[in-house]
Image 1 (cartoon, rainbow, N blue to C red):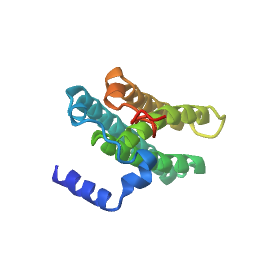
Image 2: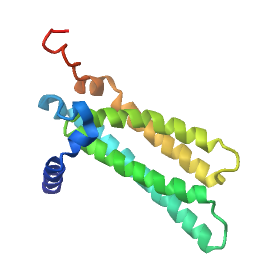
Image 3: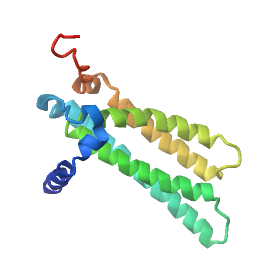
Image 4: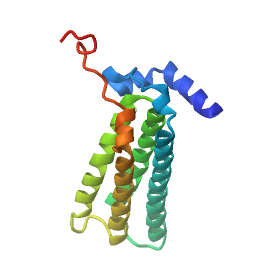
Length: 175
């Protein structure tokens, strides 16, 4: 917990929630919902799925490196895609960390990306000749893991735990 608390202090000092979260940067869910066993269990599952994403990304780079070392031509798109997957996964880890601390903005971003990335990834995977077959499989696995994250985030419990912030003017009945 010490490392997480230290990272949180640095994050707060740099006001990165404000930068990343926009107008909802300070909106945090109730502590009882954040500590609820189903919420905790969901985030454990999300972390495992993100770990799977990391393994998928590193495996793609490893396969590309081995093929290149054997003299096979690995398309530039494979290297680009593999690197992007790792950066995307790193950003998703940050969103999951902040969401687990109760920040609505992070939950919202994580939920949005878990819906968009699988669609984009699967569409790109269907472009003939862009990727070798093994990379198409990698993209399908990536998409399935992202769909799993989205499934956890959109459960009835998680949607209840992370209610949408009230629009300005409506919270006080004026509007």
